Length: 277
Image (cartoon, rainbow, N blue to C red; front, side):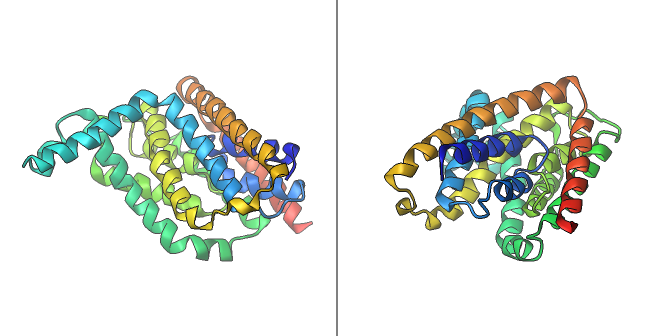
């Protein structure tokens, strides 16, 4: 891997991980365009780690509060408090519970169906179809009546449903952020809370996927000549991920997500035609 390919893949990963346009779909296409059909597992994990760090940077206060909330719950339970009392003590403790509840179906779907999905739908045509599906889901979510429910009032069942929606991101071309933001809007969440919950929900998802792939890490994949591209790629993924989060926060708060619907529709059609031709 040279520096140019490393930067291209890193920027694409960083930007599309959080924008509702599907990172997996874009990486499939970009890798083929630059004649790099298969990526190094270790490099892919480092890119995901880079995007995860960008979430920590933007939402550092929320992440710190959530960590303290989880520690507080464990401490109170060990001191004899019942779980319900410990969890509902403050907003961040309940938010931690919502994230855990939403992560459960995502983890189950990923573990059970991921291999089957990539075996059946590992084609450019499938990527194009699911990009069209992503755009359609986003377009519909922008047209449902908004209840503007605050995150503190989100039910556990709705959080579970959002987690199921996130699980569909194992489909190549189906956007994780698009699925979760749309599901949040369908659940009636306020737009600010929808985007915030989507980003925070990405933490256990990306972290869990990285941990599962740890067994495949091999530092021997990297020679001395390849270390510089990897380091630069990691830094590029952090920066591009940070910029993508800031951009999406601005768009969601000031505008609608329809622009991403149009983008994924156009890209999906192009990819389907490309796969046929």
